[in-house]
Image (cartoon, rainbow, N blue to C red; front, side):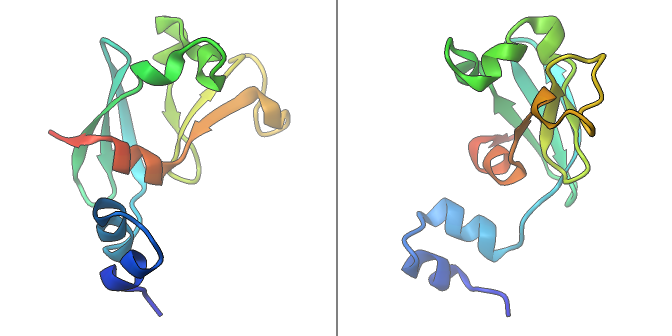
Length: 115
């Protein structure tokens, strides 16, 4: 049974997060890199949103491994509809699990803005 907005609010979620989950989770279909470490994301409902990743690339962050623009721009959508980067593009991440960095589709939606 699907949960309602009020169910999610009662669980302690903020309004934006409760609204998102009560209307159904989204999958990312397309990720287009743009200057300034931003991505335009197209979701399975056709909605396009801008995600600013610049604050995620700081020293010590897992995303620091893809902080070079040419590495960041290798972003792709994985089999689960999440953002992903292979740290070393010559290594098969389906065989070497720790070669991949991913960013949850739910967080991508919630942290992005409408365009």
